Image (cartoon, rainbow, N blue to C red; front, side):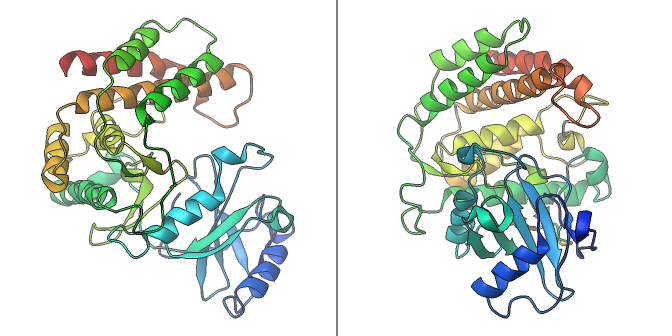
Amino acid sequence: MTAESALPSSTGTAGNPPGLDLVKLRTHLDEARPGLVTGPLTARLMPGGRSNLTYGVTDGTGQWVVRRPPLGHVLATAHDMAREYRVISALAPTDVPVPGAVLLCEEPEVLGAPFYVMEHVPGTPYRTARQLAGLGPERTRAAVLHLVDTLVALHAVDPDEVGLTGFGRPEGFLERQLRRWGKQLDASRSRELPGIDELHGALTAGLPASPAPAVVHGDYRLDNVLLGPDDRINAVLDWEMSTLGDPLTDLGLLVMYSSLRRLPGVPVTDSGHAPGHPDAAELIERYASGSGRDTGRIAWYAAFAYFKLAVILEGIHYRYTLGQTVGAGFDRIGELVPVFIEDGLATLRKG
């Protein structure tokens, strides 16, 4: 998801972007939140959203963001609007910066699927080293360290105190994660992938004992937050994978993304190569110092992150071979999968 200091109006057929009927949206907002909207709505489909669709909406005065599942999607559990709305609502009074929750609509009659509305937050998501180069080394370093500090703040939240009791099943979290991603791999198998079963087996055999459960974001990285002009995080976005579970899975993913090889010409973030970006060891130490958690097994969690990304990318490659992807860049996704497998194995061996 992206956001800017202003939302230029951009419309599609009959004034509506795909998947967003502005007349029905306005009617629903007027009924549910009288007085919120004061003028005609315009909207645009915002770039950068992963699996859910994200729109910037404005009446010329106020600005909001609407989130809904992909068009035609039927597996609601993978695109649970109520889940995202619940977690940002719960985190609002905490030290974790999130957009203000405005409204949840679970009636598909309005937009054809459940959706929610949140406040627009200004800021910039940084995905590449080139983008971060504009900040310079000192500002980049400060921004990434604040990213770690915000993760510490998230994992310090007591789920019961903010109304997130039952938000997930922490018991057996890692075992279920490994089974889930193993099944995802099996569903996408279309070619030989040397080392993938070895990596999955090694992760299963070396399963660590999880620390006390926490609210887990599930996809925590630099381009899922909005940085303000002061290089502080204005909002953490994309909570669709959030749950209660092992907090070190978030740290492992952050370490993995910060350690990725430079892979020219492929659509994978290379922000870890930006001048001033702290290395993985410093990120781990920063988190350990702030949280008080034992990070001695973080290599397992980073290797698990490599495995998950390998499975996700293989799934995309499989859909590409079936002609089910739209857009440029998918032809090289398959090249990435062996890289993630190799680096996952190497991470486990090095410890």
